[in-house]
Length: 143
Image 1 (cartoon, rainbow, N blue to C red):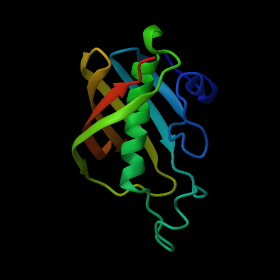
Image 2 (image 1 turned 135 degrees about the vertical axis):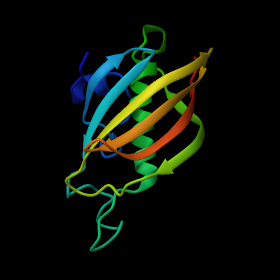
Image 3 (image 1 turned 60 degrees about the vertical axis):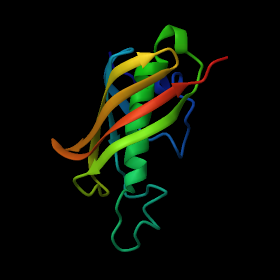
Image 4 (image 1 turned 135 degrees about the horizontal axis):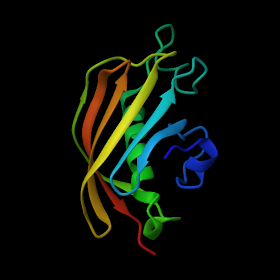
């Protein structure tokens, strides 16, 4: 299953300028998701990070991984319309600089979900090279 920007916005509450995925390439709700982000030269964060040497901030790469994982969680019928919030970020490592013109491919595999709490292993790659990885814990807001 693939999703365009409009379909992603029907699942995630994030909006510009903080929606950090452009399209979903593969989706298995509640299991796994692969998404893509093209890092454009005019991204809002690049002007100040860093002038003359633009680099995508690591925290935004982690946020992109989390948004990708949130698609897997929030695409499930029982979680539609809810928020998935960070509950933990573990073992994050950055392996490569991400710059304008790069295309990030995020993947998140959900490992354990118990009630509203879950964990997923996430990666971010550029041209098949690992840029970042980590374990993300989330809590789905209950109504």
